[in-house]
Length: 392
Image (cartoon, rainbow, N blue to C red; front, side):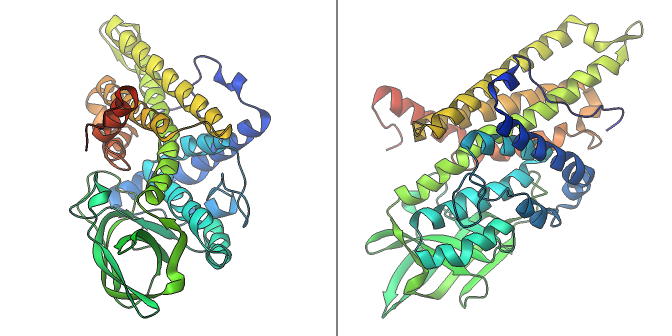
C-alpha cells in the first residue's frame, strides 16, 4: 500500500489499559507475525487463489494452533489471549485466521473433548505443531443451516463402520491429514476421524470463489468408506457435539473480524488525510468524510468491547452459546459495514488490491455466512429473549 505507516492498532477508548502483560505479549507477537510473514505475500496469494503454505509450520512453532487448549503441547492461553490472536490473524486475512481456527476449534478441541486417549496422543501434538492438518466435515450440499438434516450415514459392519455421504464447503479439506466427519448412525449423530488415504474417502477443491481466495475450500466424498471402531470419537454423541465445536469457532470469529475492521478503518482514515480534493484540502477535512469515520470508529470500538467482555466471560466459564451468537452476528455486521464504508472513502482506489479493503470486504461476505449465518444467529437471539424457537 502506498505510504501506509506501520500499523499501531486502533484503540479509541484506551482498551489496552484493560489488557494484562501476557495478553499484550500474545497480541504483539501475533501482530509482528502478520506484519512480517502474512502481509508481504497475502495480496499475491489472494490473486492466485492459493493458501500461503509456508505459514503452516511457522504458526505451529509460535503455538497458534489450539492455543487456548491445555495439554498435549498446547499453549494453554486464556480465551482473551486467544481472541487477540484471532484478531491479529484476521487483520492479515480471513483465510489465515480460518485455517488456524479450524485446526484448533474444530479439530483439536473435539479430539481433546470427545476423543479417546489414543486419539489425543496420536493427533494433538502433531496438529499443535502444524505437522498434521485437520478439517471438520459437517456441512452437506443439501444441509448447511440445518445440520440436523444430514444425510451422511454410518452403519456397523462387524467391528467396522461404513460411511457414505458428501460434505462441502470444508476449509482445509484437501490439505487435511485427518478429517473429523459427522454422520448419522442408528444411535444418533457420531463423529469419526477419517485419515487421508483411507479407501472410499476422497476430497477435491472448490474453484471459482470470489471470496476467501487465500483459503482452501473443499468437498469430501465418502463412498463405502470403511473405518475401524477405534476411528469413532467415544464421547461425541448427538448434534450437541458438533454444535459445541462451532461455538468455539464462532467465538474466534467474533474477535477475528475486529482485526479485519481495524485494517479497513485505519487504511481509510490514513487515506483521507493524504488524499486531496477541492482547493487542495485533504478529504478528511470534509464533514461527510468525518461523519463516516466517526460512525466507523464508534462501531469498531463497540465490537472491541463486546469481544473483550465475551472473552472475560468465557474465561470465567459464563459464556453461553447465545452470547456467542450475539458476538458473531454483531461483530461481523459491524466489520462488513466498516469495510464497505472504507471502500467508499477510497473511491475508485477502493477496489484495487493495492489496498486491503476489497479483499477484506469479499472475505467478510463469507464470514457472515459460515458457522451460522446472520439469519440463524438472529433467530438464536430471538429464541433467547422470547423463549420461542422460530426456526423449528
